Structure formats: structure tokens, C-alpha cells
Image (cartoon, rainbow, N blue to C red; front, side):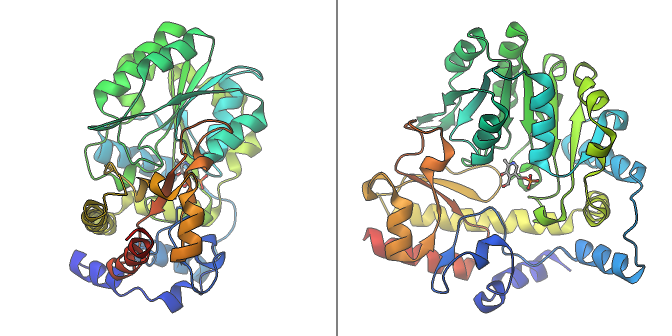
Length: 385
Ligand SMILES: Cc1ncc(COP(=O)(O)O)c(C=O)c1O
């Protein structure tokens, strides 16, 4: 399919069909609610993934997977797409991104060790660290006229006070920031100075709309203490297929050595097969999604510019917008659900209890058709006007 044909398919999404999906986004809302909450995209499945899944069924092919080709396809993809050379011997499949992050945190830190998190942060980061008994060393991003910025002094203080790792989200959920090489190098220098590790979640990178440099590729210093976890789950919208990769460096390969053999076998057969094919694909579908997401971002920008009650720094990747709507009170998500019948994620979910980060904000998912986005924005506007 051409990009124009794919865009026409995206434009033609139908609410009645979307409501038939069994996944969370559309099935956990009332029939009059439009969902812009959980990070799922509404676009029909990439034809390559559709083909692979049909072929697996046709061949009754659900035995134990062979992973060499999978790891090679990943290495070739990051080399092509991100100019990053990875050693397949230092890569392991894992069940999903959170499983990979969990494996890394468990092995690079001990219970009681602090872990730096830039807030607002993807809520499962906070839940995972609480569950593992690693105190969260919160470093709030700073809202500047140029967009969200890292408070490097806060990161330095947290590391000086004993935090053993930084859990980075690059590109960042929920702001959509792609951290620049200079910002990544600053984190690397701080981590090096304090002997800390950096665990980088790069699952949103395929949906970049700006240059993206992986954390581990930014400098020798970064590579000396990095672990990366990524997946096709966000870029191609297949988190339910359960497959991700954990990418170590020489200095962090003991993670792989100490993982139990069965932990490396939790990725699913359909997930591995689909990811292998997507990484080998020429990128046509991804190119179409990226340019469509740029359009949805433009539409959101125009709407925000017409509504001075809303503030937003446009992101450079993904499809999540971090909207400041404090004029609706401390919990605008509640007001928008009640009065606009649009479900977004409350900003307070993105920070530890008691933190000010996220108060008055919502996370808005704009990965839908332009007509549906227009309808959602009209509903939100009716509450604000
Ligand atoms: C930053 C980030 N990491 C991880 C995940 C979850 O990935 P997975 O389903 O592969 O664990 C998400 C999902 O939205 C995410 O935004």
C-alpha cells in the first residue's frame, strides 16, 4: 500500500469497528466516551504483521522459536535506522519492555538502592520500582519556554546521595521529548562520575519525528554503563504480542549471564515472528504512521493555539501529548471525562504520591484518525469555551 492509501485507511477509521476491539483502550470506556488514554494506536494492523500472523496459522507454526534470525534482524534494523551497532551476543529476547527493565533494575541495583526517575514518568516505572523496593529519586522535568528540560543539578544531587541507576525514557513518555545527544552526554557524564548505571527505555523511538540517537550510542562513556530495552510494541502497536529485547553492553552483560534461561524464553512465538518481519520491512507502514502522527500533532497544535487555557510543548516522537489544563482544577481528567466524555490519563498518575509533578496536567493520546481527533478536540473545547 502507498502512503496515500494508508493515510486514507487511517482517515476512514470507524468508531463502531473500534469499539469491537477487546483491548483496553476502547473496551474499558462507556459507549458514549471517546478514548484518548492508554497508549494504543487506532490504526489498522500493519499489513506485514497481518501477513506473518496469517502464515503462522496457515503453517500451524506455534512451536518453540529460533531466535538467531530475530536478533540479527534487530541488529540490522538499529544499524540502518539509528546508526547503532549492537552485538547480537549481548541481546536477549524478553517478554515485554517492562520485563526487560525489571530484569535490569534487579541486577544493577540492590533493594534499598535509589533509582533516578525523571517525572512526569510512565506510571509502571513508579509501580515497578516500588514493587522492587528501590526508592524513587524523583527529578522533575523543568517547564521552560523551549520545552521540557532535564534538571541536571537534581540528577547530580540524587546520584551524589547514592542513587545507583537512572531509569531513562527516551523518547520520553508522556512529554514526547527526544533527548538530544548533548543532554544524553550530560547524563552519561553524571552517571560515570558517580558509578551509576543508565537503563534506557527506547520503545517509542520508532515513532520519532526528529533525529534520534540511542543512549548507548551517544558516547563511549554512555556505552560503559548502559542497558537498553526496546520493542516493536509501540511503533507498530502490537504490545499484546509480547516480545521485546534487552540490549546489554560489555559492562552490563552480567545481566544476561545471571538471567535464568527460562526468563529469556518468555517472548511469544507470534511476537518474535512479527518483530523479525517488521525489523526487516522497508519501513513503508512506519513512514506512513509517522507522517500521519505529524498531522495529528499539527491539528492538536492548532487547537491548543486557539485555547489559551491549554499549554502544550509539542513532542518530537510518539503520540502522547502532555497537556497543562490547570484552569480546570487539580484533576482536569475527571472534568473532561464527566463533561466532555473523553477519557485521558490524569497527570498525577505520572509522579509519586505527594509530588507536584502532574497536578493540573493530562496525557492525551492523539493516535487516532483526523476526523475522530477533531471530534475529541471539539468536545474538549466545549468544556473550555
Ligand atoms: C515508555 C514505555 N515503556 C514501556 C511500555 C510498555 O511496553 P510493554 O508493553 O512492551 O511492556 C510503554 C507502554 O506504553 C511505554 O510507554
